Length: 542
Image (cartoon, rainbow, N blue to C red; front, top):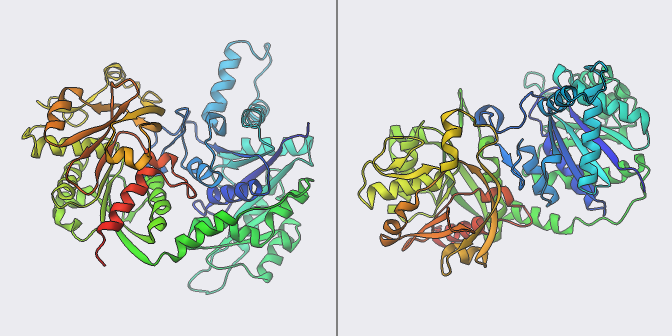
């Protein structure tokens, strides 16, 4: 059996230049050539997973079918590859150290000294091999988190170096770097890119390819300078300019024959290529003739003087997947719910649809309740995701059922009407702050009520979706809600937990306890996002 090929991907100069998109794109073009491909993400922090990280600082926490809480890049991996990943696809320095320490405590090293620069790289290599075997992959891409030159990711680069020494024909390194165009100069500068390649060399690695990120395509002069800096042919410097859609990136790489070049250096015979369906999807996204205005009302947009959307990356991408199916491009407006508390919900007038995504805590929650009320009363298509479903229940209980004190016990533990309450098996976990990895996580099966918008969207009465929460709809209020027109559209398979609510006599007012965006793909938009965008399109008044 042929050895699995491994492609390491690193980044230099600055963070946030699209290493995850580049890795996803390379994986896609190799898969399109007929190879079995998977991707691993290595995060250099000491956390065991991403579950306890602040989304404003770190971005969205992505959840896999098996419940692993991981970096948002794994969402891009799944979307580009159209494959469901698992816990073997994600590794942190914390996981590596914990495994080593647990093994040492169990005398797994036979009394030998556990060495900092020997055993962690060995553990990382073992995890790469385990991931390849578990996913039956012919090619593994391994994205090294962080930026070259940082102390934190040296262990992952050392694993790369050791694997290359042992199997030189099976290991590649691709380095993503950045060429700025300072406004005061008006000229693209290659020196930062050269310096990041030199920093990579200090870890004992010379890249096989360099992806040159910049605002515009990198010219031949700059390619030659970078090639000299790392001992490559200019053809191995791949231009990676800014694009309108991230889904254009693999097409840009293939226009420069990147998959052929990679396969040649890995000593693999090329297979036939097929990106036809992907090209059609990208063209539909870019040429959609109409525009839909969607308000995203959330709690995690503001950081200092800036507004960030990474906290809700999968929601935004899922809307982008669905909109072109109805001839629309999206015009997204990110509204921090604290702004609604200050200015009122009338600021939502004129939007074609309103989405309230997931969240935690008490900050700016009344702004979300106001947004829900505005969507309900003004018949604006509304889609509530997890926290967005919970606050829809709170709003309905207060303003339709007349329970003015209604709330979730997450916000008000002493509320007289706890329409959303913590699950029984979660109460001690919350009390004693045992919070990491203890929520209702991963894929859960549901069953739905026939005749609902929910069932119409899916075209079936059973299915599964991914979760990340610990508070649930209080079953005590089921009958009262349904009597006043809020239907329990779906529950867990055993009927014990509510999975979806939807309002009668409304174009589209649906809240789900799960996160459908975690399973949406550009070639296969999630059914609920399609249903939401269909109602947005039907109600659009140009």
